[in-house]
Structure formats: C-alpha cells, structure tokens
Image 1 (spheres, helix red, strand yellow):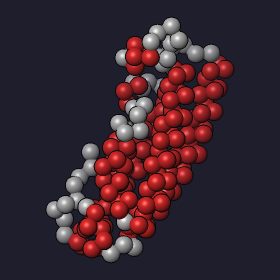
Image 2: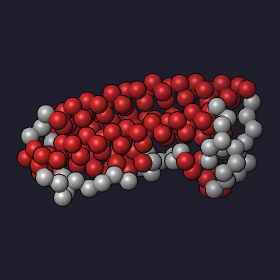
Image 3: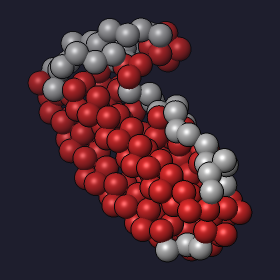
Image 4: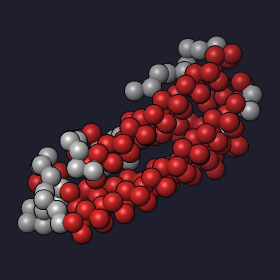
Length: 165
C-alpha cells in the first residue's frame, strides 16, 4: 500500500515519512467511514471493513513501516499508543460486526463467509450507533497520536531515521 523509503536521500526521508503517515491517516479515516456507512444502513460490503487490525490498510502500514519507528527511543511510547488505540478500535468494530453480520444459528466460520447483513431491531441499531460514537472518539485520539508521531519524527536527526528505515 505505502511506498518503501529505502532508496531516498536523507533530505527526502522526512517528506516521504510525512506523506506515508498522511496516507495511513487517510486509510484509517476511510475504514472508519465504511463502519459509519454500515451503521447508517448505507451500502457497504463487510470485506471493505476488515475485522483484524493487521488486515486493514492502516494496520498494514502500522505493522510494517510504523513498527520500524519503535527502534527510535523518542517514538516508542507513541507507536505503542497508536497500536493500542488501533487494536481497541477494531475490538469496538467487532461488536458492531456481531450486530450486523453474526447469526447465532451459524458457526463463526460460516458467518465470516456470509456477506449479507441480518435484519436488526431498532434497539440493536441504537447499540451499534453507540459503539460507533465510541469509535469516533477513539479515532480522534488515534489521529492526534499520528499527528504527534509526525511531529516527533520531524524533530529526529536524518541519521537516526535512516538507521531504522
């Protein structure tokens, strides 16, 4: 999804990293928007909203490029926070997923391969909306952490960044 930084000069590293973080930010917002569409009963296929925190585009960035930044001591804490918030978001989405897709009469595996939504009660819809509102708040924290990561990376020496890329 996101490009490699290994062939760039030192001068270009920070610009490329900033662009990758912005792309990760966009990927995250798109994932959240798909969840919103689901909750608002707009057309969205569940494959567009991966359950696993490692399978969404943001997660793919986080668990490849993003994790490299843990090697920089000044960034370890913020990467850990981003990872935890991201995992928590997917856990909340799992609750929404269960409302819209899981049928108790089917096995878990069968539910994973079924793409149609089940009909839900107004109470279940209200529950999904509540979970989504929780996701929105957590998403704001995640975006703030990404902004903080970008800011902290900008303050790092090029040599430090080059060692982890």
